[in-house]
Amino acid sequence: MITNISIVSVFVKDIDESKRFYVDVLGFEEKDDITLDGGYRWCTVVHPNQPELQVSLAIPGPPFPDELVTAMRRALDAGGLNGLGLSVDDCEQTYAELTAKGVEFLQPPSARPYGTEAVCRDNSGNWVVLVQEAGRKVVAADFA
Image (tube, rainbow, N blue to C red; front, side, top):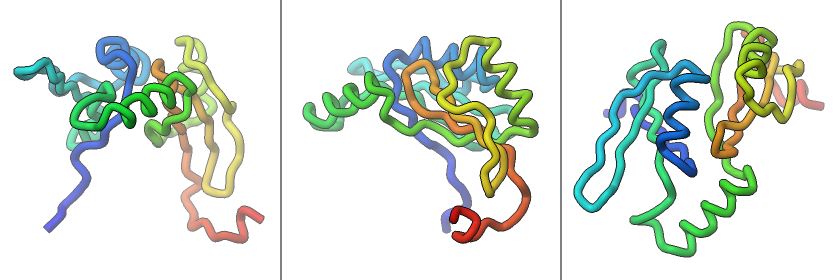
């Protein structure tokens, strides 16, 4: 029986730089960082409020085929990959704090039917969505 989600992967350009971003800027904590035989690196971070969910920071590579790795690297360079959706208590305050730390925002805090949302990029160009939820059920008509 499946009990929860335990690992999600985010493709990054540089594991060390990405780990610093997620830990020093976003407030995550390092969980694992090991290099296995053959040079494969397993690096995960966790949010202190949700330590059961590991975020694997991975560079595109084997076992993916070369053409897919090339496409993923192009997508990273173009800022075209999704990253994480993060819940926040106060979107305006989090936006101000992260802006002061040099985070690049694509969208400042904006009202949406589901709450207040801001969109930024991690240091590999992945989209990261910050959401302060409205606390109500959303229906399709809310977006009309």
